[in-house]
Image 1 (tube, rainbow, N blue to C red):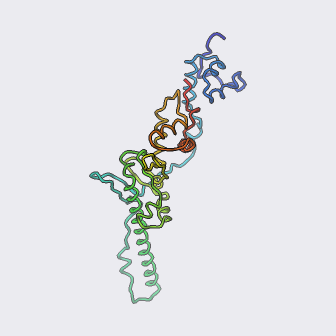
Image 2 (image 1 turned 120 degrees about the vertical axis):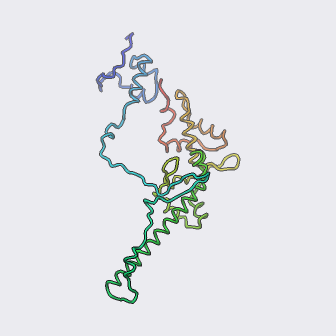
Image 3 (image 1 turned 135 degrees about the horizontal axis):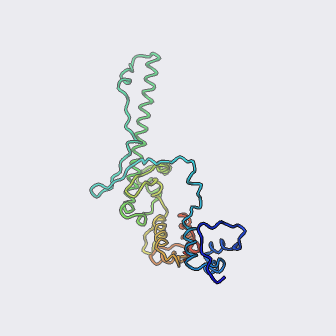
Length: 276
């Protein structure tokens, strides 16, 4: 009882052991109770916790028979001579044309069945190409408008993301909002910061004390940055994070911070606390 029971990596698991509360104490980050319960020194407990953190809670996922899903961007965004440029991906927006051999076979005065078949299909092909060109033009216009609004994000990152809604782009391009919604769904943009779905660039806003607006995406980035830089022994609560943002002129409620934190799959402060 007076000596430490050293932690052994190869020790067998005993489900009927005499430490039924250890898991609960570990989850509650109760270091002192864990040491008393297990009779371990601080160093031995630290080693045990580090081992637990190194384990994969979903080992079966490593052998899961899943097919990788690859994303092919619809547009490429590059900065050229200080200006952000948008170009369609030629692999998903190829230039099509009518084969002149077949268009030349159509005789206007010939009403034979073969000629009628060729003429009808030629008309459908031209309509298809025109529709595809219109679709590509709309896609390029929308992507260019998004990039114009979100240049700060491309230059500086998520914390510089501007508030933007579908209606803003629709009004600017004189299109219906449903058209913008359709064009931005499952369409992807390749940028120097990564590949993003068009809809990623749209977010609601929060008013600032200076009369400006801050996007929800920017606030989420700020929350994540604060948590990444926090003292692991004294993690920031949602209330504390909200207070820091208020000091920066961004008024958000504690529940809003909690919502953003949960959307990023970040646990609450009680679960982020480092035991040792």
